[in-house]
Amino acid sequence: MERHYMDSKIKGVSTGVSNVNYVCSKTINKLIQVHDRIFCCIAGSLADAQAVTKTAKFQISLHSIQMESPPLVKAAASVMKELCYNNKEELQAGFITAGWDKKKGPQVYTVALGGMLLSLPFTIGGSGSTYIYGYTDAKYKPDMSREECLQFATNALALAMGRDNVSGGVAHLVVITEGGVEHVVIPGDKLPKFHDE
Amino acid sequence: KSITTIIAVEFNGGVVLGSDSRVSAGETVVNRVMNKLSLLHDKIYCALSGSAADAQTIAEMVNYQLDVHSIEIGEDPQVRSAATLVKNISYKYKEELSAHLIVAGWDRRGGGQVFVTLNGLLSRQPFAVGGSGSSYVYGFVDAEYQKGMSKEDCQQFVVNTISLAMSRDGSSGGVAYLVTIDEKGAEEKCILGNELPTFYDQ
Image 1 (cartoon, rainbow over the protein chains, first blue to last red):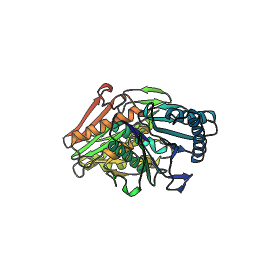
Image 2 (cartoon, rainbow over the protein chains, first blue to last red):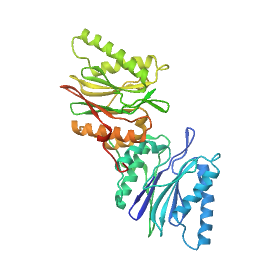
Image 3 (cartoon, rainbow over the protein chains, first blue to last red):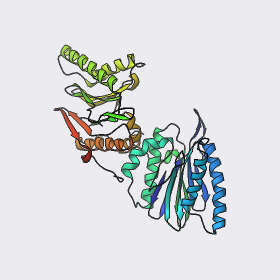
Image 4 (cartoon, rainbow over the protein chains, first blue to last red):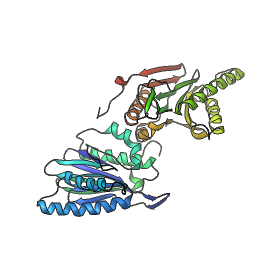
């Protein structure tokens, strides 16, 4: 999920990948960089998601060269949306696109399964997200600081990973600001613990 | 018809049960003010979820069986006995029924207790959530629950949880019903829609 705060963005995802009832990999990074200051979180069928993001990355690079300036986050999100909407019968993946651009600063966009594009202050996605709707609704405040945002994302991820059997492994977070991009990786045993652990 | 979002939490000296009030049949809301907290005995209540008909029937049957049992033993029944009676019905008819009851109450021996009887199992837990709206608030209750809360904190926790679930789950809504049970007895409360806590997007 992403958090949008003041002039930065934080995205976080957990890393479990499963194939029916078998966990293929516990350490996949589901945060894909599509441009210098724009990242995509993938959820759903990872094969579909990887295929879409590869295509999108190419199209966004081309667009950015033609425009002679870094792409807008909205443009990147639109590219994802076009791919999802036009191939909605075959694809089964959802995306969260977030990043920073000079025009509007930090932004978060979500592209749902059928190809709907929405701009939101924060958003969550994936199978584990149903368990944390209540938590994120209760705890989100607009204009959080970077540390509060990181804490919010980490807590929400830890709670979802604790309840969803197909989420787990390691938590990846990415902080995107005007100044650059910073990766934070939190292994499972360093995640915050709650009352029953 | 299905009914959803129920919660029961133990606190120091009793329990608080909470529920929403919506009963839906497919896409229609057939009752927007149903009280899903049913009395099983003076200080033992159960929260109904799943199929409305199944849940109400189980509650009525157990109410009757508990009355007989309490006359036979000559004193108030234990919460565990009530939960066992519910569990017996749920397990025996598990293929035909689709209701989940959370049983909670106060008795002299164990204080406040919450029991889950999902699918015919019997388990005592410090708190329990159930119904379709419960999926959305697992994260919230995991984060916010603390052992040894006071009665007021517990009531606030239950109201917040129900509020969050109602705002996300299509099958939950209406008003929130609360029942607080302690040594002195059971107190019922109804919190109307406009008095429920609101969060950042409301």
